[in-house]
Length: 176
Image (cartoon, rainbow, N blue to C red; front, side):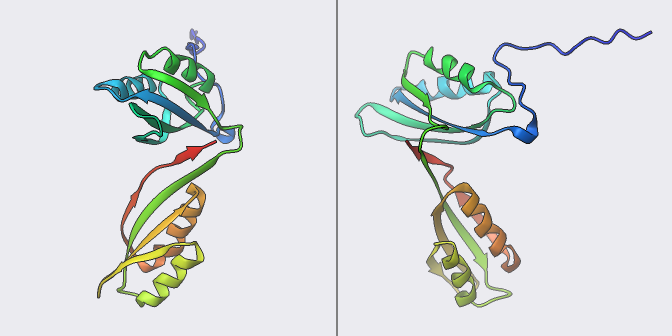
């Protein structure tokens, strides 16, 4: 006879199945002091937030930084996560702008090999996705692309046959 017990339910844990999970866009204004960003990131980690990207930049208000976090809701309830972030002394404002009209953009710098194609071919593929050529050498072309995460992913797929040598991505920044 086996004694099967149900898994423990944790407070703030999401019960969203992976096939219906979605990415929440959280924007926080945090005081620009030593340790303030550490406390925000620590809260996200402790609550098991599945971060897709985390971007920290100076805000339009002096003394505050803008933190944009893209978080999947498969592990943690987004509303509970917002409440936990609001408890941090250094956090002045935090909001989930997922259901608001929001512009989310990412920057990608992509170095592509020219072993199998000419620089003209690679640049043309990049231009189909709005990418600009930054630098061209005898061996590589470096492209810059700005767009949604989906658009960047499609560009990377289109460039894959040419041989991507390196990719640097900024992560999402958002404005409601």
